[in-house]
Length: 149
Image (cartoon, rainbow, N blue to C red; front, top):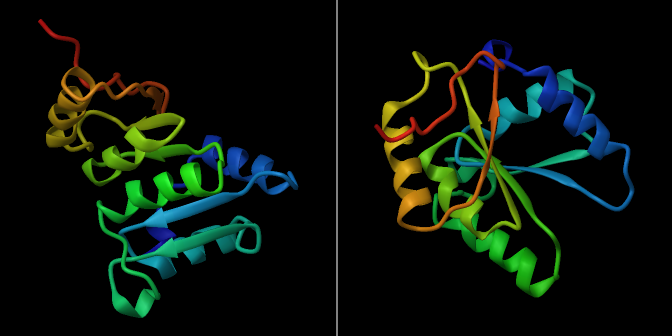
């Protein structure tokens, strides 16, 4: 499974840059399979510098849900006064991104991304005031959500 994961060079470069800094840390907070993330990071030489928290199973050590993500970001911000940047590509990430200092929505090619995410993202921007930067991966991807007609 890990061998099928698309690693965008932009994110690998970002994680490598962060790994080289002593005063900042990168964490993967996942609702998915923890072991897949660990293998992907290991292949890129990042397993020791980028920590993986969570997963979708008790065996992963900590079950992360869409409610846990914003709670953790809020805890880091308010208890430890840490600036938090959050990236995400799914509906499960919107709460986390809304609590972060900076939110970055990763937008993929139109035919492979969830159309439901576009609608939920539009609602989060229009109704909930989410302010997020979009990163288009690959760069030829059209932005989301689509502009209103």
